[in-house]
Amino acid sequence: MIQSVDRSLIILEYLKQHPKGLGVTEIANLLGVAKSTAHRLIMTLEEHGYVKQMEETSVYRLGLKFLEMSNIVVDQLNVVELAHPIMEKISKQTDKISHLVMLDDFQVIYIDKVETPSAVRIYSQLGRRAPIYCTGVGKAIAAYFDEAQLKRYLSENSFHKFTKNTYTEEKEFKQELERIRSNGYSVDNEEHEEGIRCVAVPIFDHLNRVNYSVSITGTSVQMTDQRIQEYLPLLKESAKEISSLLGSAQ
Amino acid sequence: MIQSVDRSLIILEYLKQHPKGLGVTEIANLLGVAKSTAHRLIMTLEEHGYVKQMEETSVYRLGLKFLEMSNIVVDQLNVVELAHPIMEKISKQTDKISHLVMLDDFQVIYIDKVETPSAVRIYSQLGRRAPIYCTGVGKAIAAYFDEAQLKRYLSENSFHKFTKNTYTEEKEFKQELERIRSNGYSVDNEEHEEGIRCVAVPIFDHLNRVNYSVSITGTSVQMTDQRIQEYLPLLKESAKEISSLLGSAQ
DNA sequence: GAAAGCGGTTGCGTAATAAGGAACAACTGC
DNA sequence: GCAGTTGTTCCTTATTACGCAACCGCTTTC
Image 1 (tube, rainbow over the protein chains, first blue to last red):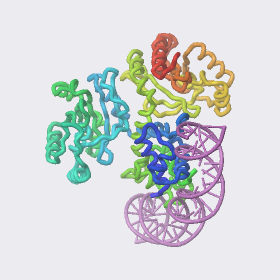
Image 2: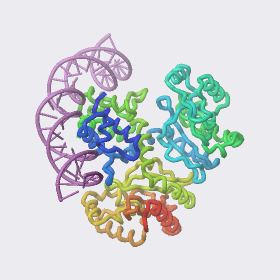
Image 3: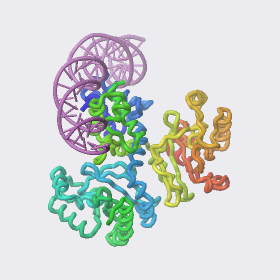
Image 4: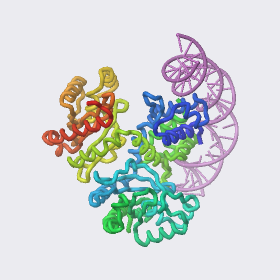
């Protein structure tokens, strides 16, 4: 591990956590280094566009370079290109948001979203990470973990209670995964965010592994059990289509 | 400038240019350093999620961390949140793509996009940079450069000819900016990409500066002059609305 | 109006780190 | 089975990153 590279990336992490920006002195204090050290690290990040100094306040914020790089990362994920038109169909037919997520380091990360103008407004979901155990999209993937993977997940994860509906017992969670495998879909019953419900199904790849899932998301008022049942055939068919585009035999 | 930080960010740039990924030896060769040096730089980037090693091929690619950071950057741009519902209205009423762009280092960068399922498919525009002189969105901003700014832009810019419609003469370009100020809108007449036309208008901020613009984009078949005239009232009204949300008196 | 304090920035000498080389392991191709 | 290549690890040393001091600009206080 190279200390100065590590430090510069930690600066980026602090700026992530402080959206209004941070000054040189604050960054030096947070990092535990001299102001001149912090300044030089920041200057190097600024040179490459990863940070930007605000004109009036002199504080530094994350730079637009991340948008560029993000664009490239998304382009590398061929599942996004394959799934997008199918998600547009889902969103149009249900007038709801459709999300595509990917498993990464025992969390899910939102890699695409399609919405309609009247769909409930949830901003900047792309790039957002979320837990597995209390999201529909996460549970839809976890249901297909192999035994070793599930064991490792459960040993590393802690069941934080986001809402009154969040599962916090390992046994309950395992039973829920059982139900999901049986039903072929999962539901986030306001387990992660109050007022938000979604239904999700897994996407299988050419090796029949599940690293992605696709969902329909709405408010808990909109997403009644009956409505979910109505949407399920479309969602399952869509996931099947995406899976087959990825080379799955399922 | 800290050399090892600089090097690690240059590695990211190489990975941006090589979407299929690069191995340690290739990166070392491109950087002109020893394999062990390259390896340690890459390991540090990987530790923070900025690169990821592919399982089968051992090559490194850009990591998902960029999606996360991009999410934060977009959240910091309040113009995106303010403009988005208005862009949805534009896209719905015109059945075309609406783009929001921002000026950055004498280029424009796409910071939001709204599309409909039947709109022409242009992937991963978000985060993409484009020239000012041959895009509707860029010209809509450049038309409002002050004299010093325009002078600096013209001294730094080179007029690469993307299509047969691209302006390559400074005089022609200046005359075009004059027309845009007079008309209150600009048109990209397949100047940047063959087959793509757009109409764009500037967005004024509270200091009456123009750092953003919003557009309607479609194929050249769809975006006839007549159709553009039809769309203009909606687009101008929308830009006015966004401008006033940003505190502009215009 | 002057002084104190704070933040951002710069330059220099030195301590600590980053760098390269060598070696090793794993894999591929002939 | 061997040669070649790539990725990875460890150790010594050369080079860089670091911290300190000083400076500049701005704001606040007296």
